[in-house]
Each structure stands twice: as structure tokens, then as C-alpha cells.
Image (cartoon, rainbow, N blue to C red; front, side, top):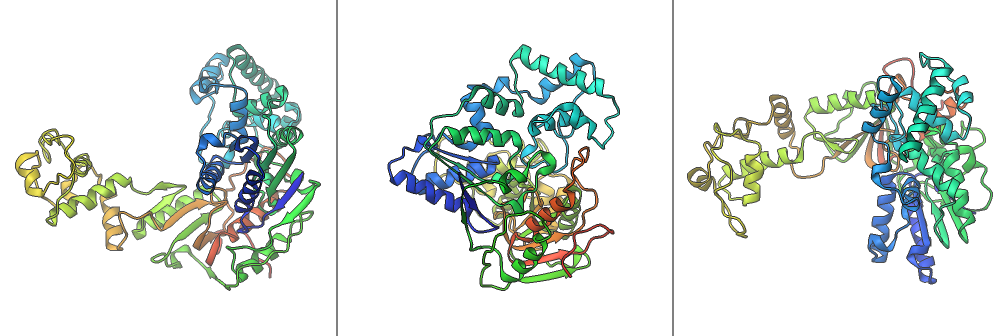
Length: 505
């Protein structure tokens, strides 16, 4: 086992891919290299970078994936065998327990598919992930399930019966199957990224991979372990034995941010000590009483909150200010709507557009009152044909030339007001929004020139049915992750209530 310690911004993925390149250069076949990331997003980033760097197709790198995806592949499962929300409902009906709640708005990170939200599924899954008896986990519960042990046991046995009868698997079951049947592929070298967030069940899978390969690299940073509440156990990573490589230069964190974050993380007892250098730039740290004091008019921003509720409050404010944004990756306004607004005003200014662009505009117009029959009179297959406003009015069903807020009748009034506010602010309708709103958990691995971080910790999203003795340490790690996302400026907003992250005096 070889361990790569990668503090924030030190380039863990870049380091691992450089090692991949070394093995490829030494003659190792690409399908004998396993690169396993913690989340789908991280796995996709790794394979995209590898394909670009090494000029491979995705088929050339079959074992660049998540651990769950590997288990799915090696077990030869089909998607019809995976338990969906609909199948959970069938099980609930059969058990006569109403329904399972498999959705939710809490921070679930990579565990969002594991049933978190429903207390039955949650407690059953966590027992399996921790490799502990269900009764033990039930006895440790501090959130009332409003039921007794006999009912929890009944639901668990019913789910297992259903899965066995119909040969179905949940996401945890895929890993269990991989371990039970020893389904490891034949690999020469294995890379495990973000290993600090692995659960005991996933560590069993890693040990299997290690046993079936010549060498295994494990990369991570225990200071950024923020999923203990969902079954991850950072102690596995902390206690690993093997040759250690420390990436000692951060390409993200300015010196002032490094000083603060280093002081914060030193509160953790029993961590792996890491001395690494920040960027030469000092960076700026600002404190604000309220988030309204932060000027968001220039630059790229990552707006962070500990909780989904806090992120939603940020969203309301940003929307009121008239800024376009991404919320956990989703645009504040559908891109096709914004493009229709832009194209319609471009057309009204005397320019010509293509048939595809006409269709995009017409989709935001009301039939009969704004367009007579859409774009069906336009000829197909004619490249280089452009249409003016008069062309559309005379020959292709357009009934008006009103400004976009009147002429695009399918856009609701609330969105119209918001788009107008964005246009007054000079927001670009074509560029990717400068502002990204996210929880700290969802922002892990991300960075921005400017970061605004709410230090409020009220309404924690953690599953608190389990007596986690290290809660304060885990919260410190979450704060540390938030503090290490900015490349230039970080704006810290004082908590609105009594509970909030604190900095060293």
C-alpha cells in the first residue's frame, strides 16, 4: 500500500494521473489499471482528463469508475435489477407500511442513492455500511423511529426477502456481492482517490482490490473527511500503513487563508500531520455581519452554506439582487429560455437567425395569439438559410413584434421579473453564470476566485439517530473544507444565531 496525502489544492488527481502515465509508459496495458473515485463526478473528471492526456477513448479505460460502478460491472448486473423508488414502493405496499421516503433535501453527497431520508432504510443501510449488527445500530439510535425493534426487524427481513425473491440489489448490496463473490478484475495497479470518505464496507472492497493487484495507491486527506455521519470512517485512512508521499504545495490556497485554516484544523486530535506551502499570494479575508454586505457584481463566486436551508436563503437573496447563478449545478433559469430572450431581441434589432433558432423562440410563444402555426412552413435541410423578423411575419406564422417580456408569452411573470433584474445588472445570458451556490459538502473539490461562507451551523443536516462521539471534530473538518475553496478572497459571514463556526482567537 502506498499513500498519497493531498491537502487542499495540491493536485491529488494530477499526481495520480502522472503515476498512471508512468505505468502506461512502462508497458502496463490500460485495461490493467484501476482508478476508482468516490463520486460519479470525480470519476468522470478523472476519465475525461485521462482520455485527453493519453489520447484514449473511454472504452480503453474500463476500470476508471466508482467502486459502485465496478461492483455493478463485475457482478454482471442489469439496471432492471437495481431497486428504484418504484420498486421500493412495491415493497412498502407488500409490507403494508405505507411508503418509503427515498428523497429529501438534506446534504447527502455521494450517499444520496442509499435511501437516506427514510428512517427504516437509513438505519438498515447504515448497519450494513458499517458492517455492524442492525440491533446494535438500533439501540444506539437517538432519533425516535416511532416504532419498536420488532417492526424494524420485520421491515429489514421483508426487504431481504423481496430482494432474494426477485434477484434485486440496492447500492449497498452491489458492494456486498462484490466482496462475497470476490469479483475483482485482474489488475496490475490500483488507484483509490478520496479514500478518507470510504465506509468500512468500501474498505473491505479496497482490501480485495489490493490483494488482487501488484500495487495499490490510496490518495486522500483526512482533514477533508466530512461523511462520517453517512457511514464513512476516517480512522481507516488515518491508520493506514505504507509508504507516504505528501503533496506539499497548494496551488489554490493563499497564505492568509492557509494560516486561518491551519489553525482551525489543528483542533483535530489524531490526524495525520501535514506541512504544506500555500501560494505566494496573500489573499484577503473579510468579515461581514450580513451577506447583503458582500458585493457580488464582479468575478466568479462560490457561495457556501453548511446546510441546504442556508443555501436556499442565499439563493433568494441572489435572485432578488438580479444575478444569474447555478444552484448545486442547476441554472437559475433554463438556458433555452435565456437564449430565446436573447435571440428575440437580436431578431427585433434587425438581424437574421437560423431555423433552429426560430424554433427555440417559438417554443416560448403562445399558439394562436403569438404564432399561428409554428415553424412547419420552413423548409428542412437548407443550411445557410436565415430568417428576418419580416420573413417570419410574412411567411412563417409570426403574429407580432412585441418586446420579449410581452412577446414570449410562455415565460411566467416571476421569471420575467427576475430576467429583467438580471439584464439591468448587465448579466450575460450566454455565458456560464459567475455565481455558484452550494452546500459545503457539495462544493468539495471545487474552487473559485471568491468565496462567501456562511458560518451559521443551525439546522444541521446530519443524520443524528447515531451517537457520533466525534461530532465536533467532524464539524471542524466541514468548516476547514469551506475555508479552503478560495484562490483569492474569502468573505466570512457572522452567524445569524448563536450557533456558528468560530475562528481561533
